[in-house]
Image (tube, rainbow, N blue to C red):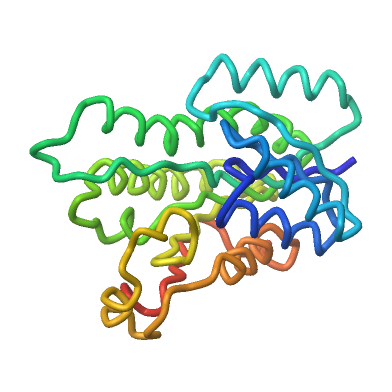
Amino acid sequence: MKCAIVTGGSRGIGRAICIKLAEEKNYHILINYTSNEAAAKETLAKVEELGATGEILKFDVGNTEEVKEVLTAWQENNPEAVVEVIVNNAGITRDGLFMWMQKEDWNNVINTSLDGFFNVTNFFIQKLLRNKYGRIINMVSVSGVKGTAGQTNYSAAKGALVGATKALAQEVAKRNVTVNAVAPGFIKTDMTQEFNEDELKAMIPANRFGEAEEVADLVAFLASRKSSYITGEVININGGIYS
């Protein structure tokens, strides 16, 4: 059984990625979530409606012990399963000006994006290398590439993930494992619903917010065999806001 794992896969961009990968029916989809079980079940139902298979895995990507425990138990229950695609999508924001930022808001944002990448990818990386095939896709952000005021913590987390993507790509390329980052701009999701779209779209050359499905199309391409000569890249998908 060939599998793709999507962290933070229950809602928003993560859900769109699960659905897009399900449409292609190449993989059994592992949908990770932390708290919203109802949303995760809804995503799984959509995956199954498309004729694909999947399951939900509850763990906090930033919690090293929990990640190991859940993934080890899953692997033991599915000895034949091979994870070929890892989409590190889980992320949180705790926006605020740096001068007033609490240490907790700094740590939580960094842990989810950066430790989350380490915990999940590190668990599977030796298996990918042994199989001589893999696709690792890290969801970063326009904030991690250009920096965004009020998001010093999020920009730091995603910027670090950009560096990790480029370094790991060089380590594993000989084994036919690619590592790329996708940097969305303003995308219509729960995370951006508080934003004033009319005001912000004036800054965006494409004059609109992106759709989660558009990001999912790019991720699905990077997760496919068609992208085998692309690695260590950060691909912006932002309507021209930063290019």
